[in-house]
Image 1: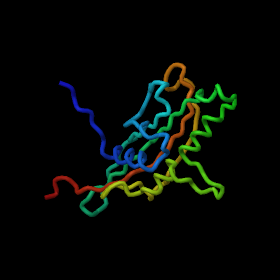
Image 2: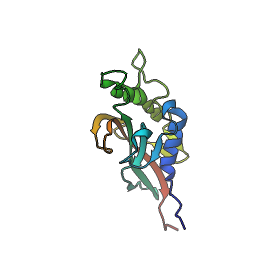
Image 3: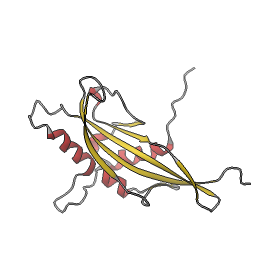
Image 4: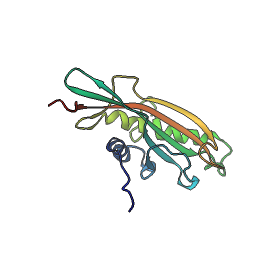
Amino acid sequence: MGLAEYRDPILKAIIDMLEADGPPELVGHYVYGDVLAQPKSELPVVSVARDGTTVLSDGTMQDRHVQPIVIAVIYDWTRDLNESFDLTRGTNKLYEYIEARDATFTLRANTLAYALRKNQKLGDNLFISINDNGLQIDYGLGVEKRGTNIFSVEGIIRFNVESTQQKPNLY
């Protein structure tokens, strides 16, 4: 008897929103949780993972749950090598997916950063937090970090989601 795979509803809400409002090229490339050895043929891949949970008492007989989320956009750095020796092309593709901007320096629609700012309310009781450091975006190189012969450039987006729930066993 096989076990049903758990799909975290918070990660599902984020992935559903990004599928709808993120880059069209990334539709179907989102995965639940951290990715270590994704086949090179499946890149780019976007992992959406929870980094932990802090449960806080807010004095109203409810708990406030703060959950750091980490999104990793993994792009094959060698994908464009046959077209150009400019190795920054992969990095530029990450910039385009994550935070492309127009001539006025405004985030373009259909980028990950724009979608995350546009959709701060993910559900009736689930919000992308605005009470902390906001979105944090970093870029880096992964030389065989994800597997043999995988040379990737990666964009990492960090933010918190928050929800509240009634404290258990109060009544």
